[in-house]
Image (cartoon, rainbow, N blue to C red; front, side, top):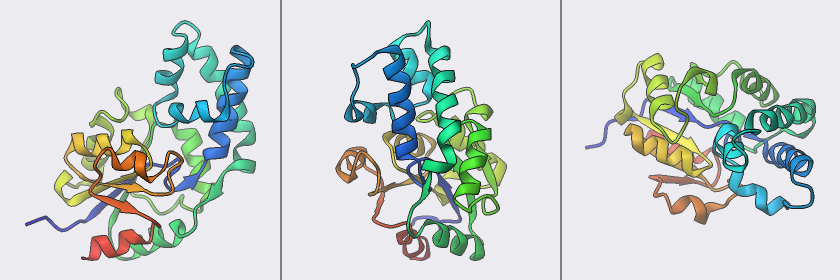
Length: 214
């Protein structure tokens, strides 16, 4: 018999807040600077999900840090203009909080940027723990970030769902032993996420309410 769900962990970008246009614009800005006329919008999709270090090291290990700084400068400058809310997210997270569920964020972003995104999404007071790239040695899909979040929040993997929009989120959840949920509004699409076998697929964040109460 499955243990009752008490804890929900969420990715941030593309899951709780719509940062897709910001991320795509920042990648294109950076790639155009270093590799003029070589990358299109669609080419960028494969870069979304892994950490910036992983992505840029795959292009040029020696200049990876330099490219990351170039990316972050553009990203921070345009953050508040391009980041949007997803329909149903704020209301669902608030309802889960009011019902006593433990809530956490597990992201590959740095804390300073995460805090800006949470404020933009009106979510900054609703989470019990936030694990960022600054807090771990190995990012998702390694289980370390989820295991740290569970330790800090005082929960076990078998009472937890990890929710995300990318393969790294689903695989990290599986590696840590949690249940997993993919979001159908992921930039890469429902079919892409379904390849990784999440336990649930959400068409709207509100679907979580029925899942955790069942």
